[in-house]
Structures are given as structure tokens and as C-alpha cells.
Image (cartoon, rainbow, N blue to C red; front, side, top):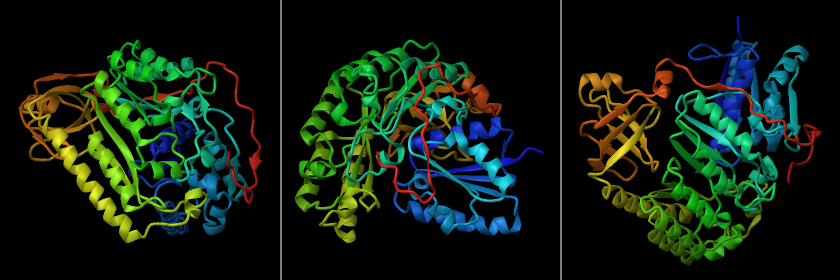
Length: 491
């Protein structure tokens, strides 16, 4: 019988997409998803950026230790950013782990699992840099209607709060033809929406010397038949150029949505963060976007309580938030990340001060989000029906979807015939009747409903299982493994 696998993912969209690649490799190697059955292999794809990342990993490993005592054949693998950072430390703290692999060698997982079974000892393989782009690996996509497409990996910035460059390396860009081939392959499988991924997605092209490459890529996506929605995340304000705004405004399938991290509204703090822009530059970008795309929904990331942040600095952040009028914001309380310059900075802000500022920021942003959402009541919206987002009430049969601007909308398909027909992956049009800070509601009738191939695939339980995309372009030089007890992978 085929071995069953389970993947547990922590962290950002990059990790989610990496997990799709891991699943694709395991299935190509003959494994099957465990579903409700007990898995033979559990893979933890970790994050080193989010708070309490270590506690989450070792908490999961502690629970798995008891399971492994009952089922000795169970294999446990740890990959991702925390594996890249901690390396051989993981098997020291959790000797029941069978495999540890890093961010640069996710393609090694099936071989490492087989080697661990054969040798009956833990296998630790951490590479210093990429051997091949993850896009050359097969992927089992989680969604029948929406897909992640990585256009670059790594980061050339040196933000003092961020450990990503040392874990994922310098930026490496895929060639446009390779990116477009992957998008076309997804669309051929019925996918309606793609999100282009990069640590700094709009610096795409830096490696092959074309500073306008990202805008060109957006326009090229506009020529792919059957691709209805294009999103991207996350751009860096310092690299945001007018040609990208023009491409967004002039390419019909590029969604009127922008997620661009602010991090702080204080120029003093931005300087300490090594963010190579200032608040005035950030606000000018938003002004330009809204001039060209008036209905764009703009969201952001903000860190509260960075070392040295004064009340004056925090007030500067609140001022920018008031001027920016974000549709929503992901707000974070600063916490130390070992290995980052900020962790060693003086004037760490007391936890109680950070909490109080955080509460004020959230209250302000909720007020703005609610005002912005209330302005949409009465408007018609086109929704891509989604699953796993929001609630579905058993009595009202309420479903959820994403508007073109990315807002979450709960709607009720009225009438039993329509209710049975609407599936995740279908397109509906409805009218907004109620607004909350973090979602919208459409309680009236569905005005139109378009059944899609993506909806058919979701209903049938089919997900795209795409092969790796490679156009025979020059490969990255083969790296050397780092010993399990070796130093660091800082770029």
C-alpha cells in the first residue's frame, strides 16, 4: 500500500507554495495524502519570522514524539526557514526527527526520507544556496481555482528586523517565459486566478538587468486567455515605479488591489529599520495608484514597538495611517528575532507599551476599514466563490467569495436551485448590503452565476498537479551542503 503523508505549514505565502511543491514531489514518488487516515510521514514546513516560531515547532514535535512511540514506522521531517536557521540543532533537541532539510533543497525530501529509512538514522541536509528553482519541481495545488506562482526567490534588502535574506539568500529571478509557462499550465488546468510571489515582487528583473520587467510581466499575463484575475505580493515601496502602476491600470485582469508594507510611518524608525524610503514617498505612491485606479483597495503591514520607537514616532505612524486610509492592515507587535540586527539594538520598547500602542493602532485602522467598507454598500460586486474563508451557516447556506479588489464578501445564494449550483471556483455577481470592518455581506439575491471549469474541478475533488516548469535556461551553480553543526547561511 502507498505510504500516506501529511504536511503542516507555518508562515507566509512562500511557505504555503513550498508545501505545494513538497506535496507534488511526494505524490510523484508514490505517496498519497493521508486525509483522515493516520500518516506514515509528517512534514513540518516551518517559519522563522513569525512570533513563537520555535515554540510552535517544538510543541508539534513533542506531540509527534508520543505518536512515534506508538507507531515507530512514522517518519517526521522538518523543513523551511527554521530548519535552515537551526540546522542540526533540531535533531539534538528532538532526536526522534528523521529528516531536516532547508529552504534551498526542498527537492531532496523524497530521497532523504528513503535514505533515513534505509540507514535508520536522521538525515540533515542544508544547502547554502539554491541548486534549482522550486518551480522546476512538481506541485500539488491546494486550490482548484487559484494558484501561487513564484517569480523570484530570496531578497537583496537588509531590513534590520528581518531574517529572510539569511535564510532564503540573495534574490534570484526566473525568466519571464518560464513564469508565463507556469501560469499557462495552471490556466489549462482550469485555474482562474494567480498570485505572483516574491519577497520583493516588484524588484523582479534585477538579476537580468531589466528594471521594468515586472510591469512587462503583468501586461504579459493580460494576454493569457482564460486567466481572469492576477494579483501579486509583496512589493517594496523603494522599487515601486510608475510603469507598474500603468500596467495595473491598463491590464484588465490585474486586480485593483495593492498590498504594500509600510512597517512604520516614522522616518526615524524607517531609517533604523533600513527601509530605503520615507513616509512621504510611500504616500506619493498611494496617491499615484489612486489617480490611475480610483477603486483600488490598498492594504499594508505595520510593526509596532520597534526598538527606539518613541510616542512621537508612533504618532507619525498613526498620521500616515489616517492619510493612507488603508482598506486593511496586518499589524504586528515587534518581537526579537535572533540573528537580526534589531535584536541587539538598545532601547527595546517595554511589552506593555507595545501592547497599548498596538491596541490604539488596531482601533484606528478598524475605524477606517469600516468607513471604507460602508462606502461600498449598494454596489454590485463580482465574486470568485471561495472555500476555507469566512463562515458558511448551515441554516442560511451563506457562502464566501473574494471581490476583484480582494475584499472578503459573505453572500447567500437565494433559492434552492441556485444554492445547489454555486460551487467554490464559480463566479457570481451580487450587491453589498452590509459592511463590517473586516468583511462585507450581500444578503440579497445573486444577480448572476457563471459555472466554471474550476468549479467543476472543485466539486469533483480535483486539484491541479502540475509538473515543474523549465525551459532549459542556465541552471544555478550546484551548492555544497553545510555540515549539520556548521555556521550560518547569511548572504
